[in-house]
Length: 436
Image (tube, rainbow, N blue to C red; front, side, top):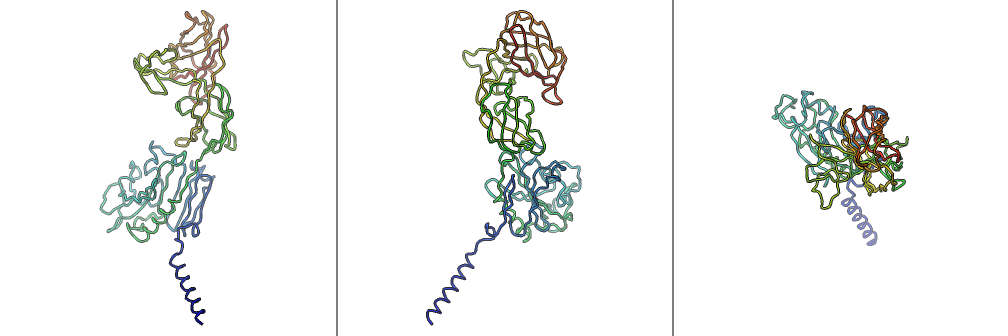
């Protein structure tokens, strides 16, 4: 009998211990995880996820926004946020377009950044990198652009957070599907506290994945003008043409690469030249900055000072190891991958400097500086335009008037051409020449 009582007591104690040490509701055991190629997030009970619809997203110009709903609440996670304000995340009005709860507050759609005019904000720290900005409209916050709720308490209408995800920007928005400002939850109401707690817990599990990735470059080193293939994924993201950039020369003009249909590879031509800027007397340009001329410096390919404003020149790309990135629209990029530009094979005719090379008008005076030029019989090629029989008195300099632009530009809708020189010694390397 005592053994039976002892077993019964142990069973009751175990049951009590289990009930008081149950797993919290936000553990993986009680949650569902949504994951795709752009993000991963763990959902709270009662929240339902709608994966991105590729056709709808393309029609709207969007990419991969995930929508998570619970009753009248809609949480939108945009892992690739393209904005126009120039700052990370953009303006709140860019993050919250056409949301019913936001439009309920806004009385004048034409007002610039009207959400900021109407809103009072309270922040909720979610993690080290995420702070949720909650927006309220108060009956006391009078503004000609704002619709005010009935007294006495402020009404919540949106929450936003934005920042930098791996290789892209992101934005998160929580809004209501109600267009009636007086049905929106009041500040500190139990309903709103529960929703914001759920959202904060979900955002702590949010993990963004790089939208475009470089896995390898073949070959890993090549001379100027060579064709190189980059392998990875996401190169056809948003149906926008990918671009190849050298981290050291992000503004260098390059022909568009050819992207495979599956977006997993692209080919590009190693640039033959880089653009340099003129500097004040006593300085030279290094990586797009003007620095003091070092001792014993030989002025071979420094951009000469311009008589008016800033001059832009073109020089051969120096052999070196560079950081190569692939971009797919503003704010979308891969981490730089090492790529070696080898020295080109020696040529009997070579161009070391072309100036000016940017925004040139027909008839402007242009100078090539290099080696192997002949006293007569030098021909300049710019696109399909040619100027024949140009003299060089020192074999190092050629000066001529810019011809009218002709031929195929390697950058669509602009006038960018390859420029070179040929003579009895042979054909030179090519640099970049652009018209205004």
